[in-house]
Length: 307
Image 1: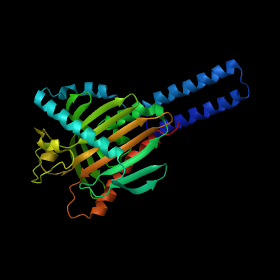
Image 2: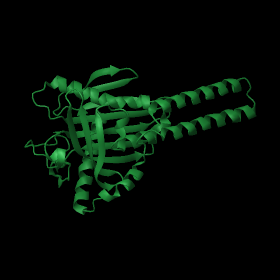
Image 3: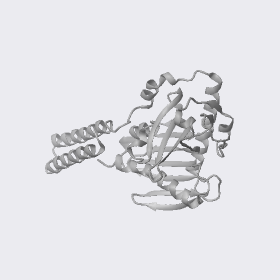
Image 4: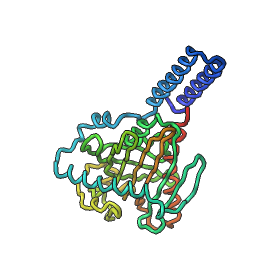
């Protein structure tokens, strides 16, 4: 079922609920009041069921079970991966919280704010926006954790997959992207960790490490934010197009999300610092491209709009 059809269903359901509410408003007997409450509960249940039809809306544990064959059992590697991503989570929280080191890049419609760091190298972007559907909290987490979840709102995304899993909330993933204007493809390997801080706050952090994917390029990558990533050395059995050097390799210094559920909405802060491997390209052009890529995530507002 495509997103357009889902939204049509949402609209029809909303119209029916509004019509019934208008009729019931004329009489406010205990029976009518009970019926109105039932109507609202039914609407919430229907909307929750329809959200489950969004592609790639699968729980993290279900994803883990689907990829259990990729489970790593090496205790030293698991320990290093855990330490690395604990550091990444700490930095993500830091960048999400501080304001003094960021400059407003632009304010967009629907209260979407995009900032970039003032003086830091590497460049760090911060996107802040709200989703006015607090009941969609779990669904949003499902999409952002799923390697293919951004298919729903990112036009240059090609595919994603788990490469290695350590536990239901810690894994190595691969993303592939395409530049349609230049007909070029890129890819990135990164570690990802999901932390349930509380019942209404979740952090998803991502960072690239010193991963040998057999790419023939001699370029050396160094994580300038999560330093422990540089000593995390593992081999990945990559695909032929990567081994043959047909794809552009990208590198994530730090990326991720802080997702906070409030009474009337969900606050999302997206942090992103990525090495695009674009030599001889002006910094302002790269920053503009990064801004466009980050803004894709604000499309979650339309995907989970008020129903």
